[in-house]
Image (cartoon, protein in one colour):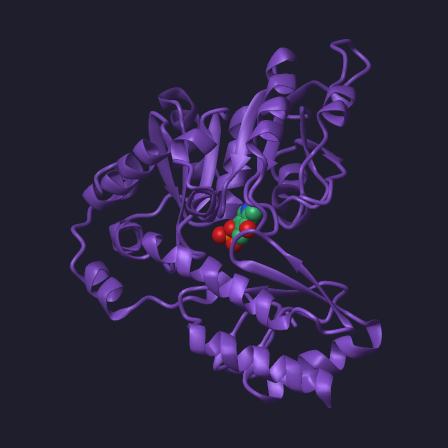
Length: 349
Ligand SMILES: *Cc1c(COP(=O)(O)O)cnc(C)c1O
């Protein structure tokens, strides 16, 4: 399903592709903005378009400064390495991206020890678990340095009260706080909460412009001036310093202007999809709040359902216990209707 870097399997295009919101392609307007971007060498701090983007996202997140980086994965790794020293520990969720889906970078590259804790049905950690996981300060134990949370988690907006409780436990114990807000944009739109409010309890927040916002590349890590200075050094160390990166930053600025307001449509499309699929006996729906829907299909149906859809030019996530479907800019309300018809046809056959 997921091609390795060395794969030379042919690329198959799907008319309707629910695999991920990272599949969105730059529009003509975005490409024009990229072509016309004013640029400089950002490793010398001289790319004006990158500066505008960093300042703009930092302002939106209510932080002092921002750092433009190539990916959400690098952004999280930079944050972990800026917060934690060698052999220190961060607490996070077993299903969270920075633990599960970043090739073990924290341990392999950062020499940082993960302490992953189970999450509840909404994807949230439990304050009691976090409190119990923080190690006493003595020579036997690793130094617990950071709590790293995520919002949204699998399309689920995190409960602000729970976030506040978790952050209180962390603060009381002297931990720093990082938020992996790859899709914080969706959380903000859905909960009608300013980004700065969602980011306020955290020292650092990472956000992706390359998912629902539709930029081809780019994440912005935000925090205090001092934190971002440290982060800039780690980015250089990891090879994330980019030269005329304004071409990419221009796409991100275009995304903030034109695509951020469109996220509500993605959420409405996911809700319409869930509505249209309700009442099918052999199908359980797990709806996130935002742009994700998970299909709980019978084990015997999974492979054939995915194949049936692919034959009709519709791709969904791999045939697991929960088959993920992600709505995004390049999926229209008409596509949603087509997909509902195709899934119902599978179950009626
Ligand atoms: C996608 C994602 C990332 C990583 O972003 P990349 O740009 O793909 O490296 C990190 N955290 C979460 C929650 C994500 O969904």
